Picture (cartoon, one colour):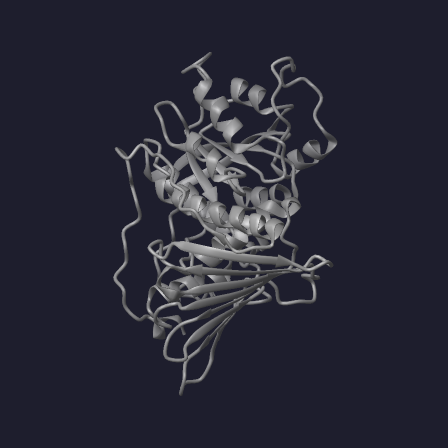
Length: 397
C-alpha cells in the first residue's frame, strides 16, 4: 500500500461534505465499484478482503484564493471556515494560499475544489513553473480537478502534458453516481442495444452562473454515446422564466434532448435521464441512485442502493467516492505521471457542445457544433483495457 500525501485547495461544500470525508474515512479504502454489484448488501463470506493500493493522508489545506507572491508563510491568517475544516481533516496544516502550501509542504497529490477562485490552468502552471527540488520539497505529480478544466475549448491546450507538468485528473462525479455508472455499464454490455436517443431533465437553469453544473450535465449525457458519434448541430431556446430546452443531433442519426429549469431536489427525482435503445428497450435513471431497466415481454428491473446502510455514504451516492477511488488507484499504479488524453478529448466534446448551446440561446438559431481538438503528447498513453462486449444483464440482478 502506497502512502499519498494530499493537499486540498478550497473550502466549498463539496470539499466539506464529500472530498474530506471520503479521504479521511473508509470510502477511500473500500473496493472500487464499476456498477455491477452496487446494490449488493454485505454478507458473511470467505471472500478475500480488499487491499487498497493507496493510503491517502490529508496533510495540508488552503483557501481557494489566487496565490499572491506578497503573502506571508503559513503563519498568516486563514479563514474561519478553513480552521473548521482542519478539525475534520484531523489536524492538517493550514496555509493562506496555494503557493505557500506548495513551497512548504511535500505533497504527492493536490485536490482542487470547484468553488474556489484558483483556476485549474493557474494551478498547473504554478506547479510546472516551480523549480525541481527546493529545500527537500518536490512539486506534486498529480492534480485532481473538480469541475470543468476550462471555460472554453480554447483554454484546454495548456493541459497537454509536457515535461515537468503534473498529471491532470478531471473529476466526473455525476458519471459515477450509482444509477449512472450502472446504466452506462448496461449500455456497454449491450443490455438495450444501440442508444438512439437520450432525454434528460436537470434541476437548474442553463446559464453562466451554473457553468460547472451544465458542463457535468452535458458530459453525462454525451457519455451514453461512443466518441465516434460526434455532435453536429444544437438548438437551444430559453423561456422568459428561465427554463431552457436543448435539442442536439449527433452522428448516426442519434438525438439528445434536455430540459434545464429550477426545481427543488428535495422533493423531485432529478436529474432524470432516459436512454432509449433498440427493440423497445430503455433505461431510466432518477436522482442518480434509482435505475429502471425495461425490456419487452420481461419484468421491469429496478436497481437501487440500500437505504439504511452505514457503508453507503453521501460521497458514494454523489459519485465523489468512486471518482476519488479510481484516481487514487491510478496514482498508486503509475510511478510516472499518467496521460489525460482521453479525458481531455471528452472535455473538449462537452465544452464545444456547451459553447454552441450558449450561442444558440443568445442568437435564437440552430448552431453547428465545431469539432474541437486538443494537442497532446502522445508518447505516453496508458488507457484502461477494453472489456469484452457481452450481455451481463443477469449478473446485475
